[in-house]
Image 1 (cartoon, rainbow, N blue to C red):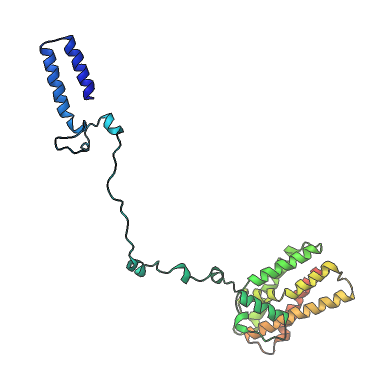
Image 2 (tube, helix red, strand yellow; image 1 turned 90 degrees about the horizontal axis):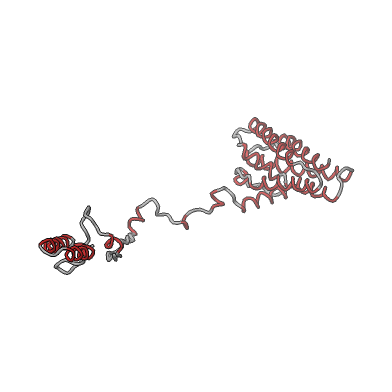
Length: 261
C-alpha cells in the first residue's frame, strides 16, 4: 500500500514540480509512519499483530502466522476416578445373558427334569420365571408341525396363552403360597418338550391309527406327569398331584390333537 502511494507521489511530482511535490513527499512519509506497525517491524525489531478493531491491510491478512503456543493436555488423576460414580470397569459388570435372566445351566437342568420324570425336582430352580426354554420349544413344535404340512403357529401360541391362564388360576386356588403367571408359563413350556418328539414323529409316520393313538397317550401322560410333579415340588402341594395332572393332561391333549390331525 505504501509502495502504491510512493509511485503515485512520484507520478504527481513529475507532472508538477515545485511546492506540490514536496508536500506530497511529506504526506507519503506521514502515511509510512502511520502504517509502520503493519508494514513490517517496529523499531524494536519484533513482529506485532494489529490492535483489535484497527484497519488491517489485505497483504497482512493473507500472510500466514505460525502459532507457537502449547496445546492443553489434561493430566490423568486416578484419585478422581476412584471417587467418581464411573469407577466400575466393564470387567466388574455382570454378563449380558445374566442381566437378561438367561442361565443355560438352569435351562439344561429343567430340560433333564422334564425328560426324566423320576428325577427329583429342585424347587428353587423350577420356581424361576424363565421363558427362554418355553419359547424355543414352542418354536420347535410349530416348526415340526410345519414340516408335517400343518401351519399351526397361531394355534400353538393361542392354546399356550389360554392354557397358562387357566392353570394359573387353578393353582392359585389350590395352593396357599400362590404362583406367578411367568412361573406357570415356564413350567408348562418346558414340559412341552415331549410333544415336540410326537410332532417330529408325525413328519415321517402317520399318527391316525392305533400305534399313533397309543404314542400320543404316552406323550400326554409324560407331559402332564412332569408338569404336575414340578408344580407339586415348587408349591409344596403334597398329595395333590393327580388334581394338578388332570388339567395339564387336558391342555397337552389339545397339542396332541394338532399333531395327529
